[in-house]
Each structure stands twice: as C-alpha cells, then as structure tokens.
Image (tube, rainbow, N blue to C red; front, side):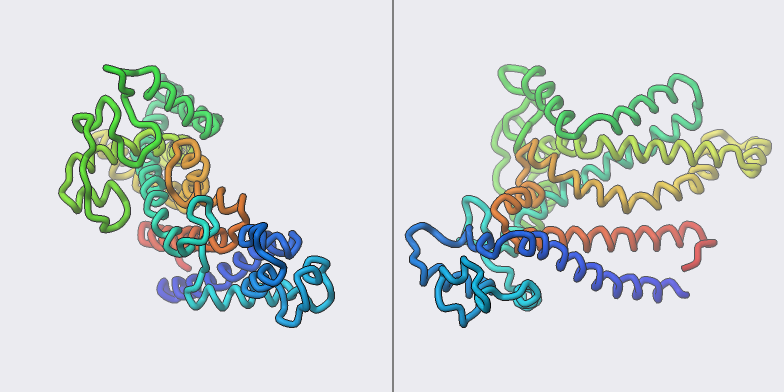
Length: 374
C-alpha cells in the first residue's frame, strides 16, 4: 500500500472514530441520567410548567405531543424522546454548525459554545506546545547523557529525574513550584515568576514590572501574538507566565521520553556499525549524534503521538492549578453543569488532534526509516 493510500484510509477511519466518540459522550451525559437533568441549567423557579415544557421540546428531550410538564417529569409514555432520537437531533444541529449556547458559569446563555471553546482553545494549545517543547529539549538530552554515561553519576542523576517525573503528581508539583517561585523567592515584594496569568505583570523578571500593553489578536496565542504584533514586552511576559505551567505539564513526559531514548541509545551503541565507526577514528560526538541518535530516536518518535495525547489530557489539571483560561479548565466546569455541547466539542476536537498527530508520527516514521511499509 502506498503512503498516500494509507493516509486516506486513516482519515476515513477518523470519521467513524469521531462518530463513535460522540455517541459515547452523548450516552454518558444523557443516557445515564433522568431526562429532566438536561433541563436543569435552562429552567428557573420563576418559569411556569408551560415554559418548562417548551424548553424541553426545544432541547429535543420532550415530544411535541406531550400534554404537560408534569407528564414529562413522570416519564409518561410518548412524552420523552428516545435517546437515539435526541442524539440524531443533536447531531443534525452540530453538523449544521449550531452547537447552542454555552452553560458555563458566568456566561451561561449569553454566548455560543463554538465561540467560547475556540476563544479558549489557543491558551490550551500554547500550554500543550510549550510542554511538548520542554519535553524534547530536556528529555532527549537526558536520555542521551544517561546512555553515554551508563552507571556513572550523570546516568544516576538522569534516572532520578526520570523516575521522579513519573512519581510526582502534577497538581502537587505545580503547587510546589508556585510556593517556591512566587511566595518564597521574592525581591522587593514581588515573586520571581508569575503564578496564575497568561501574561505576567507582577514578578521580578517581568518586563520592568509594568503592563506590557495591548496586541492584535491574530491567533489567540499570547506568545505568538506578541511576536506578530512586534510587542516585545508582551512576548516576554507571555513567556514568563508560561514557564511554571509548562514545566508542570511536561514533568511526567520528560521522564518518559528520557527513559525511552536511554534504552534505545544503549541498544544502538552496542551495534556493530557503531563499533566500526569508532574503529575508523570518528569523533565520539559524530558517532553519537550522526550515527547512533538517528536510529535511537525512532522509538521516541513512535510514542510522541501518545505523549501529545497525555499533554492534552494533563492540561486539565495544570489549567486548574494555575487558573489557566483554557478549554481544559472550562471542560471541568462544563461537566459540573452538564454542558453536553461543550463536552462533545472538547472531546471531538481533542480526538481529531490525537488522530492527526498519530498519523503524522506514522508518516514521519516511514520517512525516517525506509524499511517501514504500510
């Protein structure tokens, strides 16, 4: 099978995966709870029964033939729309781009789910990308150092960092970083770093400790918009605000990637072609980085798709700890108020990112290793 045929088949399969996920989330939020639960966020004590019944019909939960709200509450026959009918109605609206109004606290009934989600998503994307970047620039060198200094002090330190990353809960590590760099390390009454803002304005290393001004919202990602707006103070303070949450998000994946690189590097360094390269008098750096690393990095590329999924999932916890205004934080609030539209959109967008990322990893792997055939 040619590579483009494999990509097309995977993209076609993605449609069925997304459909199955939408069914699962809809069932968990609607099928396991009484039909009246779906109305809880839309009705108020001042509404009479006829108004409540109108809301139930508008949401596709009550049938048009239901005589009264009391009949609907008592689950009288012919009053409640079957679950499959509710799903079909929801799916038709979603495919038409109508995701309804959000039920998130503070903005309930005043903004669309689509707009609220994609106004928050850039913050989550920024955090996940920063976490992935830290994973690469810290995890891979740790694995290389550990493999090339096997059973020596650098190897022991690297393994301690890796195992520590596996063992430390993210919420605890984030809280410790906040206490250390915001409360304990202080200069002139200000903490060294920012704790709970997307753009730091009160910290020692912030840009002169002043508000960095306004920018044009090109992408919604503060760091990128600061660059595109040529606003260096805003760019700098956005990066400062990202340090602690990104490190908290990446700590576990750093441990994972470093262990994978270490194991793969140690195996590659025992191969005959590495011995031959050394016998030719090549410099050790050339042997490690040009010959060994190119093959040792393949397993790390393979699991990178799983790490992206982990980073997106872990962003929920990190966003709560650091009051980060992303979709992970909002998804928890959506679950509390049973905002099915927001939850469906969150899960489906996350699934698309994971599927596409894993597909990209497979393509990259095939390009790096010509022996791979799909």
